[in-house]
Length: 248
Ligand SMILES: C[S@@+](CC[C@H](N)C(=O)[O-])C[C@H]1O[C@@H](n2cnc3c(N)ncnc32)[C@H](O)[C@@H]1O
Image (cartoon, rainbow, N blue to C red; front, side):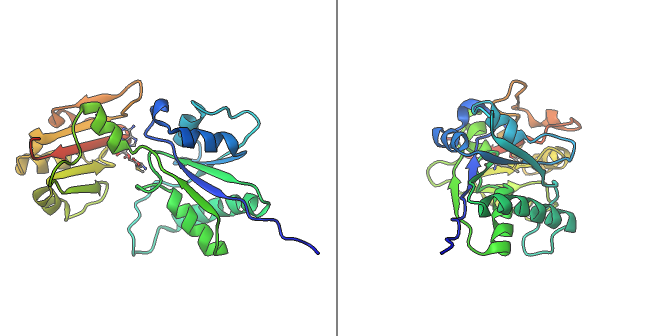
């Protein structure tokens, strides 16, 4: 009798926002125990931030480390996705599936937490489309917004605060009403949008309630308590804007 090899497990591992000390013990353990690591990178000739962060805590000697390209394009759920993105997800899924079907576990380290604007779930979804059942384990990570909030000692939400998290890369006409109606707002992916955002915050008289944290927890971290100073500045992709209207 030929027994089918059990499929390996895909670990979607949140590795925190960049400060190596903000990787959880569980993330480190899983990455240490898994021989095959697949890390996302935005550019073909670039490196994977996630792999670099993971490598600061985990010895990569003897591991198979693959850095696969996931193009940084806007994803609008419910709409057709850019064919380049779909093709990259598919290629990555096929590589990962090759290992899983041989019974090898694969770890996919991802910035922050896998559940928040991460490529991790696109990869899982593509794998499920290819093979139906996939053995998966999600390891939560410390989000960028948690690290940013801690860095500036500003709570994200307290009491009856209602909080909105917005991927601000989009021209989204909901943003004005979100800023008007929510008590606190976390804006991610703001790096190319600050001129527009500052103008809107000025208009809504929220500019003094906003703080921008760039590359939180990294050596060259910057904090802008006056977000007007970000206008016209080239910011890093790792930039998050926190807004909270009420005092404690
Ligand atoms: C693709 S999302 C990933 C979010 C991540 N999964 C999380 O849980 O925080 C990328 C966005 O996260 C934020 N981000 C990630 N790392 C950051 C850091 N070290 N400092 C500030 N913002 C960061 C930025 O807003 C960036 O545009």
